Image 1 (spheres, helix red, strand yellow):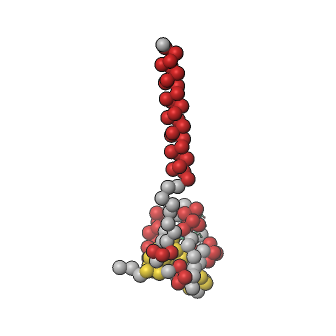
Image 2 (image 1 turned 135 degrees about the horizontal axis):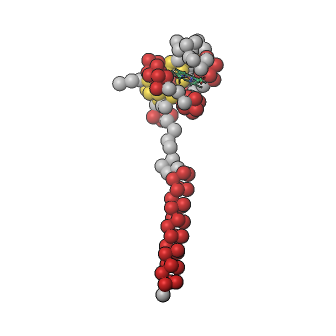
Image 3 (image 1 turned 120 degrees about the vertical axis):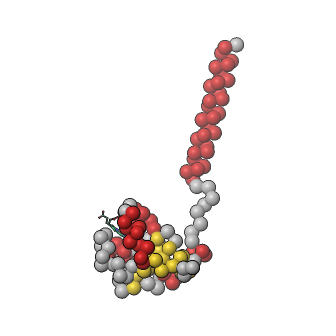
Length: 118
Ligand code: HEM
């Protein structure tokens, strides 16, 4: 089983000499990778000691990058530090409301069509 690490612990490793980053709730020690990173050291240092998932995803890293990162895994982020996603997102609510309006409009049109026939 891999080690459980809190965000506070990760935050103690944010210098170029000792750099930990959280990506997808997993903790990576990127100290040795810093100067090999094709995206430069500054980008990694900028997310040192914290969650860099958003920044990592924004770049659209390749499958190769995802393979490389496995070598630097040091543990899992503690459950208490994992941000919980809201059970229903805004997008889902929007889609549901849209579907209901569309359904009601359809019923209205069909009913009018039937009324016109009589
Ligand atoms: C373990 C973590 C990481 C690994 C193994 C990794 C690896 C790589 C690799 C292999 C590339 C070359 C392009 C590709 O294959 O996708 C790359 C590019 C890049 N990475 Fe990372 N990366 C990591 C984390 C990050 C983070 C946290 C950031 C931002 C804060 C970042 C920013 C960038 C940028 C800006 C590029 C250059 C993209 C370009 O020039 O098109 N990387 N990285």
